[in-house]
Structures are given as C-alpha cells and as structure tokens.
Image (cartoon, rainbow, N blue to C red):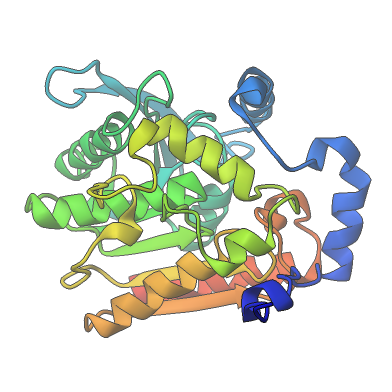
Length: 330
C-alpha cells in the first residue's frame, strides 16, 4: 500500500478568524452562509441593490453629486458615472475612480462608494464611480470594457469635473479590485490614460481558483471556493480555468506586470483571495514595480465593511488612507 501524499496526510485547515470578526459572522447567521450559486443570484442582486440605495452619495451635504452619461465601448450601450465633487474644494483635485464589487455578477455603481467618499473627504478629492454590465448576461469582456470606457471619459473630462487628469487613482474591492487591476493593464497596453495608482482591496484576480487559500476556505466564510467558481464561470463560461484566459479578465494570468503604476493590495488571512493577492504583489515587485501589501490576520472577505468598528477594520482603513495620502502627496 502506498504512503499518503503530504497533501492527503495534512488537511488544509483555514486560519482562525479574528475574535471580533468571528462574533460578527456569527451574528449574521444564515446571511453569511458560504456556497453561493447562480440559483442565489436574484437574492444577491436584490440585497446588493437595496444596500446601495441607502448610501448617501453627498455624505451629508459634503459632496455635490452629478450623474453623467458617457459613451460605452464600441458597439455597446453607453455607461453611467456618478461624479461626487467636494462642495467646498477648489480644483484641480485628485480623482478616485471607483469600481464596485459583487463578484462580477451583482452590485451597482453606488455600491461601496462610501469607502472612497470617506477617503475623498479626508484628502480633498473627486470620486467617480462607474456602472458596468454584469455577468452572466454580459460576460467578458463587457465588464472591463465598460470600466475602461469610464476611465477614458474620466481622464478626458477631469478638468470639467474639478479633477486633475494626471492624478487619477483606480480603486475597487473584490471584483472591483480585479477590474481595477485589469483596467490598469488594459490602459497600459492600449496606451490609454495612465492612472497614478491602483488600490486593490481583496481583489478577485485568478479564475483558476486553485490556490491554497481557495481550498482552505471551501465552505468557510463569506466568499468561499464554490462562490468564486460560480462567479468566474458566469464571467467566462467553459473557458474558466482553462488555457488562454485573457489577463484583462483575470489579471493573475498576465505574464508582464512591468510598467504599471504603484499599487496597494490587501486581503484577509482567512479569505479565498489571500494567496492570489500576495502573489500579484510579489510579481509586481519582480517586474520592478512598486507595491504595498497587507494581509490582515484573521480577516474574512469584506471584513471591514461588515464590521467597520472592529480594531482590524479600523487598522485596514487607516492603512489604505495612509497609502493614498503618501501617493497623492508625493
């Protein structure tokens, strides 16, 4: 009888959650159950839409909000951008170009905008949030092409909205982080607008879904391996995990990470995207790039959104703001 392999002998045990965050997950009950499938898509979209509508984009009157229509990709519908400009600031201001999360399958341009709005209030910046088409109805390349069209519009109209076209930072969480990385690659390769920086929070980068952290988090946490496979399959169909997947769909597939703007990347130690995030940062360094990486101990996916008052959440938010302050100040 053959000896068991090392992988068979040592089961993959997920890292423990931070105690404050574990209590938060427990309080959510079934709402935090892992294992999302396309059968759950309508429920996910309703929940994401309802939550986004509660966001006050003016942040209590601190921002003037305008909804702008912009041309979409060639042959595709136009896109909508929410432009939030500080009412008391004088330009030209830095621009935070925000890409929402939702696994490429849910969410709206209003989702998660409270995070960059908090940064903008501290730093004096314009926020532009893009609405992009969602999979599976609109598979790759629709989402990233919409995000690129929005970036081009933002750079071309930056002065009109009180912004500085030379100081645009692309930012996003989860799927939005993956799209932010992808659009930065796309802009480099098409010689389009060059962002000043890219801020990637728990980014969704790798369709292969086969890292150690992905296997560790099977059936655990908010966005487990099953949910990840569901979302990538919605975006790519039968191509998911196979050869020839475009780096503009899954940035982890990129073979050349040179010539990219400075990056901030973070993830929780107890989430699916931990290893692909750390690997992407390492490959940016290997290509001679500038990257700052944080892996938050005991953090689950989206921990700082669900438990904003937890000590780990406050530390994560402070680190992102600090990086932005240094980037824009420099």
